Length: 375
Image (cartoon, rainbow, N blue to C red; front, side, top):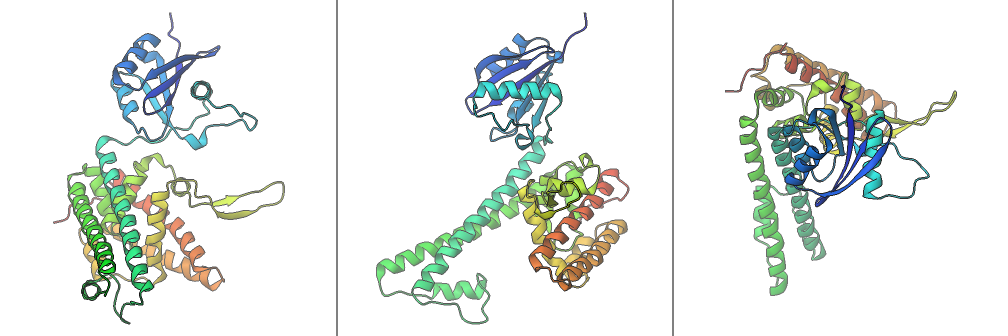
């Protein structure tokens, strides 16, 4: 007798999982189980042979632990994008049971979009670079608190002194207040600034070690991306871990859409109307790409630092980098001369920069351009 595929939808929370099953004819709720490995194992045994099951659940704060558990049990599982799940405008009732049933029904009908699931090494490096982002945000907040305290009491850094560099730190250490309580507050703020700087430096050193220990494919991509102007080691690592497997993007515009860097559009009939970028994509990737795009305001050139990053790379990748400099700088200059605000121009450059990143990534993954390991 031919086995029938059963589509299972799971609404996953920290402590519970609501389960529903969609067969060929109907959709029914199974109930709610604890979010524990043993309970999941019993559920799969109850639902039938693992090879006849196809399970889906939404990407969320619980990560990919459930995906790995089901995969080990031999069950086909997909993690779906929550923002791409179809919704009925008139539906005003939301419960875990109904959410699980909707997942099972949409999964059976083929209406869900699966996300790429990283392996453990890839996810570990991604968590580390996101920890750096959190540390940088904390550092900015600590600096802002100290700066506003000094401003309230009339202290301004000397003209020509670069903020938060060595001479600026020496100047801060020499500041004294008459009130003891105010001096203590200042020292606490200054101590927090120093602690934040040490934290960022410690995480960046850990990122360097993690890159060296990363799988060869990921390490080669990070090394290759550093040939681009404005993309140093940490930025290249962020791009590589946020993009993931570049082979899943059939074209550069798909990568641009994944980053949310494509224009929004509201067109009907003979009217075409395009607006700002959608921002419906990976925000971490979009942020670092826009930051890197500011480097293309300047004329094409290869400075000492960029030359050092490129010296261990094959000639083909360096040619892509040089082509990117000419293309992107020309694009920026034309948009600014046309009257566009520089922020809009840089955003357009960032979108095209993703195309060059896609080209470099595809070459590395195909093995057509060999990336030699750095000495």
